[in-house]
Amino acid sequence: MTENVSTQHRISISCKALQLNSAVEMKEGGRFPTSITFHLVPPASLGRPYDLQLNLFGEDLNRAVRFQQKSDPSVVEIGLDWWVRHCKTWREDIIDLALQPFAFAKGAGGISG
Image (cartoon, rainbow, N blue to C red):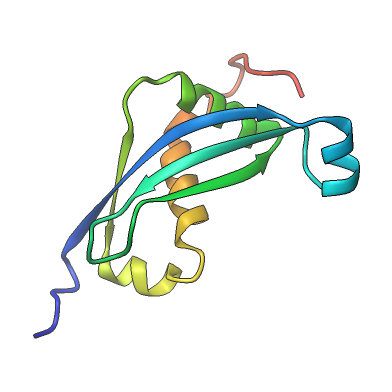
């Protein structure tokens, strides 16, 4: 039986931890000053819960910090067609979708970077 292309899958995303990396981690490990660990919970049909640590800076870091300050997880809905196009990079792409609402409007303040 095939799945309807219009079926929506709900993926829950939360911010697990913000980590400030040491100078050694930045120099030897190639990390940015700040890493954030996200927790993704896809439907069972798409995979298991997964933690993903991303090195972020600039506006991406600003959005992630605003996202972290929110107490409840965000839910991103995707269709099967999106899943097929993004199946190799879905974790990073889902986090980007979850952070989009946390972009500041022009002229608003944020973290200096």
